[in-house]
Picture (cartoon, one colour):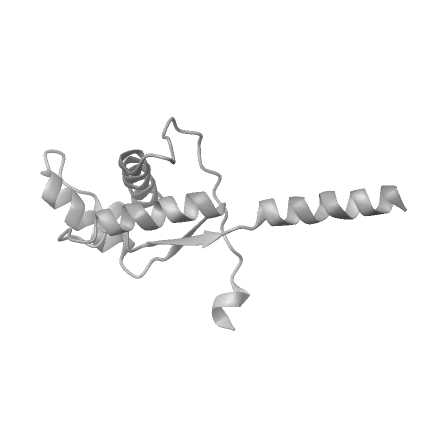
Length: 126
């Protein structure tokens, strides 16, 4: 109940040129999203050194995002793409490279749209 008492923070994401039908592009998008989340959750005290290696940046990102679970909502195709990208990166050493902080959640927009279309057709035919 304490967690539900706090207001949610909703952040709109920018449009980026990645194709959700290609697992490589989905991995690039999730890496981009991870960097974005590190900037959102990062504090002033936990800045990486200016000439940090990729491994040091990955460790720093894992520290910043430890315990964070960010839902990524999309249609069923998008959810399957994210699941495939997570399976592709399952053997990575660092949790952020495995995208453990991202939780894919389906949104049933298409089912709701179909229901509304059928409802409208039935109401018009009556």
